Length: 586
Ligand code: MSP
Image (cartoon, rainbow, N blue to C red; front, top):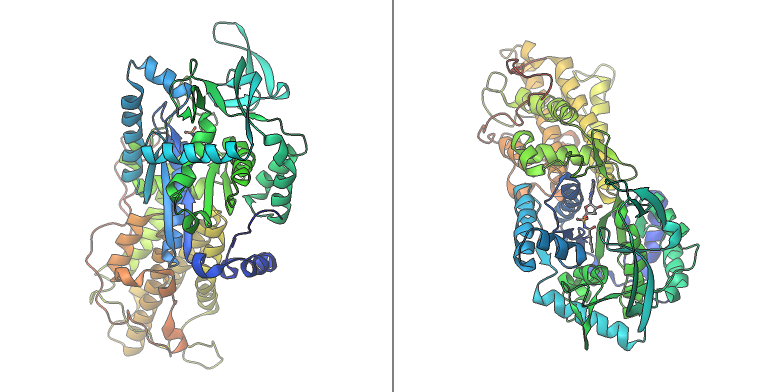
């Protein structure tokens, strides 16, 4: 092992099968400084076009992990931003008749606006045209150059401007363009490629294959999910060619000049990848954050992050990122999103009807890291109505509606009605399914934690939804509206039903914060849960069941600020139909 291992995960968050690996890692690293720190990044977004739901998906995944880490008490840094150099940005600015920097500023602002309006709680927004970044790139370049890893050479081969990527002959195929002309395209992206022959600087990528293989073998969870880890290993079965890391200035002016050679511009991917270091404070005091770096990236940019980036870092003598989290893509009604097909989904426009939490929920509930997922308006509306409006919103309504909870309090729990053991002859009114529900909710934080950690957020949401259904079943089974409030026993049981249900809701609201921050806030505020009582450490479900004190018992509920999530109309089916109102009790 030639580079420093970093603490990968803490034992606490991992399933048993991974614990042995983690113990080894934790022991070999300095946990004291880094254990409560976390640094997560999104890819930085190209500014040649406006943001779409795919971009928002990358950002929401990272945002969810960042928010989750904050809830766990971590000091978390979350970086996003825009990738502003390169030929395709230069061409897009030319086509728009704009000065490149003005053009970049305008589009970068659109990304910022999207992220702000979708509650992407980044702590740093980086633009590659910023001076701090230029300094970091120049320094990084000089380190590689001084180590003899960059040499002047000549490159000849295929280049895709759209992907800003060099390709080997086996990665290129034939195609016909819109005018019927024969062209060459990248087999992976379908984008047009051109033959390029240039004098430029080369990076000795070929030297790094063995070290990359060591890194991957010793860190089997460095690239997740497994499918993408295997894809990187497969790519490393063949020799790596040296990589061209500059372009002639005459062809590419829009980029950072090579230090000491103004005739050359630094390759946009080297420039862009260094953004992760810039944000960490490179070249000055970057260790603190760089040792705990995690990247979220789409599957299309895996090679850049899992082969080029680690090689550059190894070359510069820097630690490697702890985990590269890879996600798949969103298609729209079964087709790849593209301007020419006119099916690009604008997340700002959609969130006006779906709400920002609705968008976030859909992307994280439907998005599966391993495989592509599909966006369809109708499907989104159905899902949000079923899970957020009816199931979760309905549950909150049932527990807090003044008709059922006239005192508007978090009622008392009666241990006789719901004894901790369901014994024969006990006066308890709870049935076996109720005990099963308590077991499920008690173990829910552990389940959710495991899925949030591995970015299988859809599984976390699936587990939460299953518990919400169980709690709705609990209420439906015991029909509190049929109990006689004048009978003491009945009243105690009624209070207990609501106490238990509100405790369940408190757990759901707390766990959902990383996914739907606004809805969770509304829910927890309605329950009267204070901001300081919303962390992971405060979860502690139903303490009264273990004869412990419950800080919420007897507390007044928070103000009613309306329906948790209003039902949405289905675009194709509900046009013209009157909006359904929700039933209170069923
Ligand atoms: N600028 C580079 C990244 C440099 S990082 C050092 C880039 N930019 S991008 O704007 O093209 O893509 C940014 C992210 O959006 C990538 O993670 C990419 O996978 C993601 N997506 C782009 N289209 C997508 C979908 N249709 N669905 C999901 N994510 C998608 O690559």
